[in-house]
Amino acid sequence: MRVSTRGDYACRALLSLALRTNDAGPTSVRDIAERTGLPQPYLEQILLALKGAGLVRSKRGVGGGYVLARQPSEIRLSEILSAVDGPITLGDFGEPHTDGACNHEGQCVLLSIWNAAGDLMRSHLDGYTLDAIVNMASGETPWPLASR
Image (tube, rainbow, N blue to C red; front, side, top):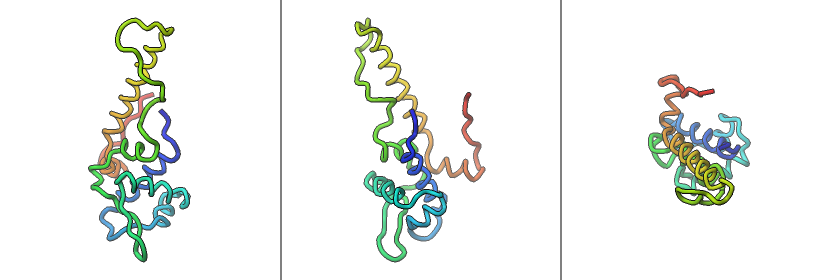
């Protein structure tokens, strides 16, 4: 699976909001863009998608902007990515035959492997909340180790 630019930007934007949950009031799109280095017009589109998914709330007018719709401990990385990119899968390959012999040159086995890998990816991303990432970013907990 490859995380899209849109998915990465969405995660960065929500992490920026989570890092400032104790700040008073909403954060403007401009402020989020400046803090994260993301392009503001694209960020506005992403925040609208996140709002539609119920991950952020917005306030219009002077002093307006965005706030998290739930506590950072209740927002999972998998939710953020799904909100802007759709379901987390390794592809849209359809359903394999169930157990037993495959009469399609072994393709059913590959489909089953791709589906299992997608399940593992979803499960892995479900294990990270914004709160956990804030703690890692602030040095309170160790970063996840990448296996190579």
